[in-house]
Image (cartoon, rainbow, N blue to C red; front, top):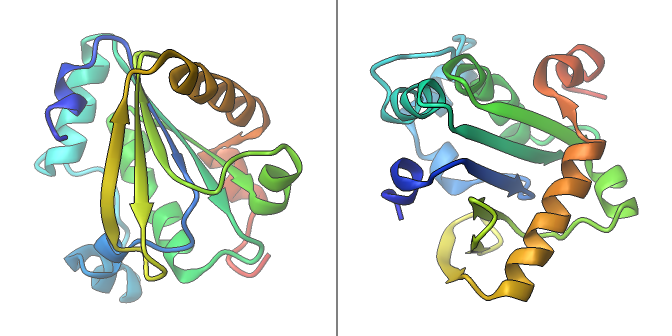
Length: 169
């Protein structure tokens, strides 16, 4: 799936719904975050380097994260580590879970590439990725586009969300 993040033509958009991701807990960045280290932009980090390269080529990386109130440790980690993604050129927005539920957003993660390819994730209760489903089926892609537009409309940019959101809010 990693090739999709280099080969898309215009937009790569994600909805993140999980309260925590095992891949985050198991990364060296998790311990650095627990120790109070700032997790900013690192041009040597493969994700940051690719986001920067794609953004410089005129492509957009965007995502909306659903955040509980109060945020879980996993979500607080994402809020902190996501600042590096934003510096790299990704537009990350956030929405409170209660608002996401009120607006009917789904409770599962997916990527939408170029409004034509939808990749849905499956996780276990610990946030371990069990697999993905990839489809170009028009009604599934249209649904993903509608979810994207709805989520994007109601989500706040990272800086604005963090300004009004505290770890205990």
